[in-house]
Length: 359
Image (cartoon, rainbow, N blue to C red; front, side, top):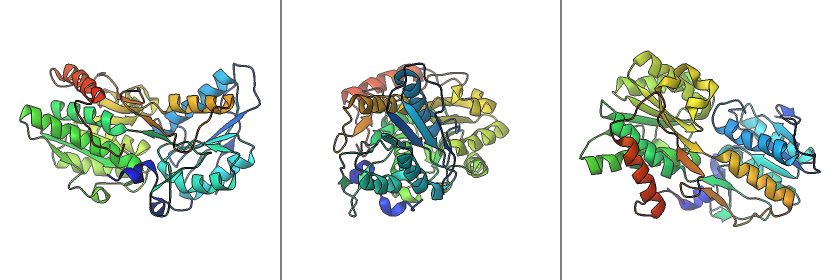
């Protein structure tokens, strides 16, 4: 995986993205109101996706409640909404704008250049130059997450729980912020095979060319998620990790119909998300990105006048609790796996185990 692409962004792969759903403050502040406005733009999944956008949105809501900031938000319904929505937040007089998702990179690049007095904190993406080298801008602070580390643990759990010896993963699109999950998951399964002398196979990530890994093509079509998952199940997979936001609900639907199949959530603890209640008993674990905390702290820094952009990039890791996996809930892991995962996490944090990623 290309480090520069992960720390910057592949602008060539992102379309220039109609105004949708601009709204006022999503929550009433309990703190005294302050003269500072924090704003957010979702990707096509929307703020109620039960996953990526919803976790990011929690950071804005906390800032409203705890810090007393004013706010505005724009919910995107498709890629054509991204640029108009980001521009609309600037027009709203926002001091800081949080564009949520790799797909909003191009819109962030354009808006940050045109509005140097406005701060931007894009989630899951940075900016890049024409040659894809990182582009550092004083008013832009990327919030990135090394989810390969946490996904490694999830892959180990999947391999240690599988009864068929086949597990699977797929994404919404081959963005670095998506493939990093899949890559870490694949490494975790490989590590399990190495230490256990097992031969668990990962479906959906054949070869090293990540652009050829299994993708649904979007982050909204639940039916596609169900179709892809059903195909994996037909091939023998009994654990599936969808990395496609709400599309993952389709994996849960397929698992319910198949029996004996488990799902691994991403971004938040899906077991606790009402959107996934229908199949919560089948959620083996979730690879979590603690975006809410990172966003809250970044808004707080902006309010206090200590916002730092440029090369000061935030990267969430196991070490700083920016990423992690959820514990066992209803679906139980293989015998002894929980203790082994705790030890693995400690080894990753100490550097004894090196999980490959772009960070």
